[in-house]
Image (cartoon, rainbow, N blue to C red):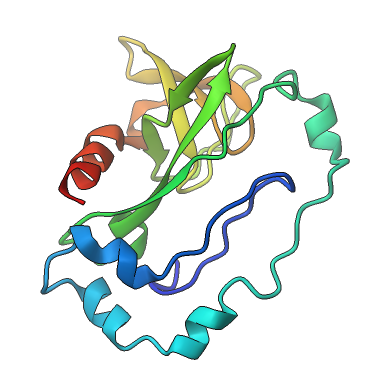
Length: 176
């Protein structure tokens, strides 16, 4: 579970993200939101220290070199989306919306992994909780064919391991 005020986002060494105050991101929250009340208790020193100690991953990772998708160019879009939710899990209250270039076309994340999935066959896609996923095909047998935007891998996985996020994100963006 993530702390509601700070978490680490791991990106490649060429990605540039803008740090913004959590207060600027709460316009889509209701006044009685737990996250909004927690933000009111924020210490400005904590905001200034946010991001200290983050280390860029090694540029010569063997998993990058061996991936057939290594030549895909990821865009630099990462949108923090806060949604009003009755769930107590912070991972369902805030999440990132990703997009990337696939075959020269920018594609947005459509789903978010809600459970870890360990593949048992070569064509299956490994998922970690909160992985951004682009679902490319919904099979009749309740399996999805998709692309894991965190790992750059393609494969199939059970449909109930991921929830759709595009509708929630667009609603939140429209209200801000």
